View 1 (cartoon, one colour):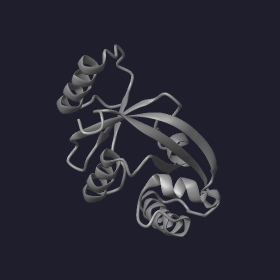
View 2 (cartoon, helix red, strand yellow):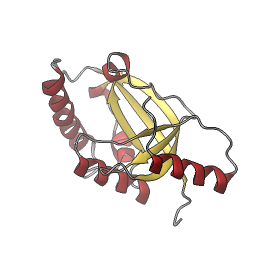
View 3 (tube, helix red, strand yellow):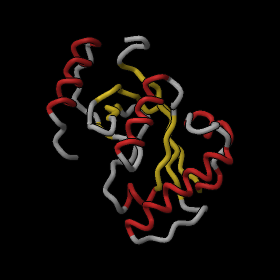
View 4 (spheres, one colour):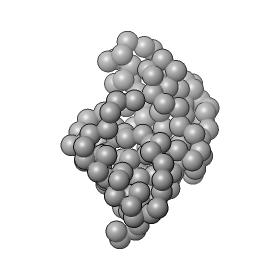
Length: 157
């Protein structure tokens, strides 16, 4: 893990002071592959529409990303690297991408929230990653499906 920015560290300290949390075990991350997408997705998380995310298992195994686990705390960053909220991971499932179900597509909160829209958007997203990173993307690639709940700031906070 890289050292968090001053802004992330200050955000975390404010969270700890506001909630009485006494640990420093967290990740800071953004969702998406461009600053515009990262800002859009952070906004969906903050507003309560997005409560799930997905990533290819290969990124956790080969790419060195930390595999999510239930109870993990994550500082969500927008495209400028500004911390927006903190989520707690509530569920992690690994299965092929094409086994996504309607409820997960809805919970991810993007587009029209249908499974068809979700699959098309994620095929496009992961195909871009495959082109950049030199791997072959297929619909049956093992995917990490993660659900979460925003724990801070409180709604309306």
